[in-house]
Image (tube, rainbow, N blue to C red; front, side):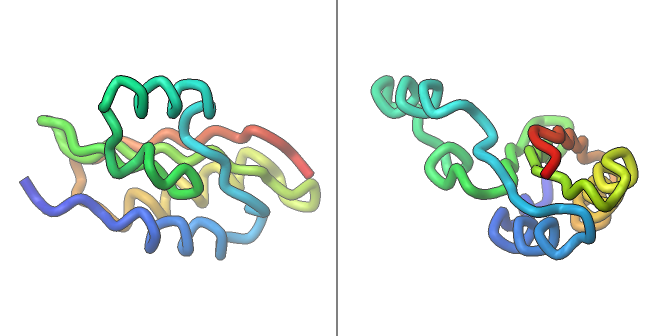
Length: 103
C-alpha cells in the first residue's frame, strides 16, 4: 500500500482551483467531539480544515467539502476538485467532493 497523500498539500491544491472559496470540516463538529471523547481521534479528524484522507484496504479515500463561487458552474468546480485529488494519488483511490455552499 502506498503512502497516503498529505492533507495539507491537497488542501492547498483544492483552494487554488478556480471556483473554490473555502473548505469545510469533513464531519460535523459534534461527531468530531464524540470521536475525541471515545478516544478515536485520527489524523483526519484532528485537522478539520483539511481535505480528509483515509487509507482503506482498497486504497485512499478522500473527501472534500467545499464552498463554490457563484461565478463558476458548481458542477465544473466539483469536477476540477475531483480531478486534482485523483491526480495526486494512486488509481485505486476514491474521491468524494461535496459542495456545501455557493457564495
